[in-house]
Length: 127
Image (cartoon, rainbow, N blue to C red; front, side):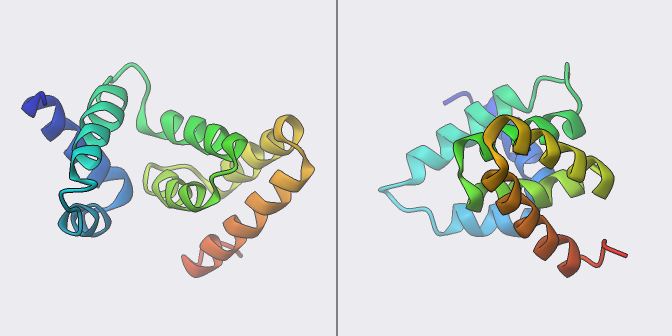
């Protein structure tokens, strides 16, 4: 493991998903899944998110569309929260879901809107 890339990844992961979430995830890692947690933090967050070519807001919008295309809705909700942390607006979320519905299908768009509404209401971001 590249320790510097892991540390960069850890800081990027915490900045997007929150220190509490990431710390709890790592604390409950065990011998079975700790190597995956470390590799994912180093690779996804250190290598991927550590490249400053794209800003965090753009990466978040990209992640929302890719994760929706994969149908991984638990991860989509997590990254929706991260996107909000990274400055993605309600209007931008709506527009991203429109694109998701066009390219991934209306049922996937409906599911994204359902999850987004729950999260946005919880965070009191809907008027």
